[in-house]
Length: 205
Image (cartoon, rainbow, N blue to C red):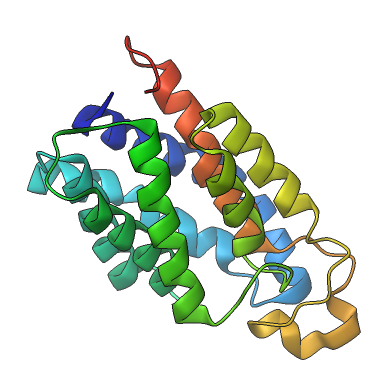
């Protein structure tokens, strides 16, 4: 079972991963975007833990809804609304439960991804964060490791794609050959589940 502490760890591990990879995310964004994805994500997630400490959420769902709301208010560009919507909708889908299973998290994250799809109007193959998130959600119920690997593979598969959504779509053919920064950061978020589970005494679900 996954409790509130697990979800706090998930956000903390994500923040550490984003901080570690911020320069790479910005380099990816420099090629096809505004060159600010890494700095924006670093700033947003760096203060998520402070918000969670201040608010002291008592359920997994509340952890994610608070984190999502904070990202919407602090992260610039499209990343804030998209990541904020992802986490808020996932948290809402988890409801008031104090513990959830991996399958329940998979279903809830699926609802979050669906909300991102609706908000951004993108779909699989458009060279966006969804290309990492959609395959991850499909296998999340199997294991966090499977979800991590699927997200990483999905992010890499954006390299040969032509962007059809977001700022990168303005580049047309020139967007081909570059990894989507949103897919790369989404892979960090999914991968953080593995470390968050590994640092606990219980199983991953």
